[in-house]
Image (cartoon, rainbow, N blue to C red; front, side, top):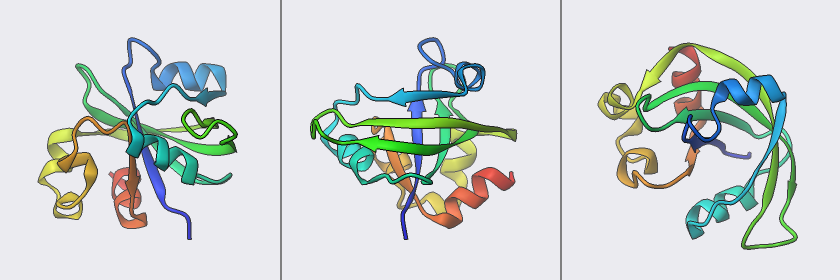
Length: 128
């Protein structure tokens, strides 16, 4: 079973609203080796949570992987399509206080831009 993932973005660079307007985009330009590895492991249909950093610091919407081009192993290009906005954004403070995320890289490795999620974590974020 493929993991779900959380993708972090700076809303002043590319927000979830931008993704919804565009319908789809290519997620690339990630440099952290662990984040790059996570991108390469994605497959079409992988469920995503879009998390906005900066002033927002919240999970705000969903997306789905359309395709993965890992021909350049150091810069995989993952095409994603927009999903829906979450009914209510889930703040980093709410995530950190939830025991489901105690061992999550989202909490432990704050700078990681592509974070694996368990299906239970994904469900918690989308059901909030």
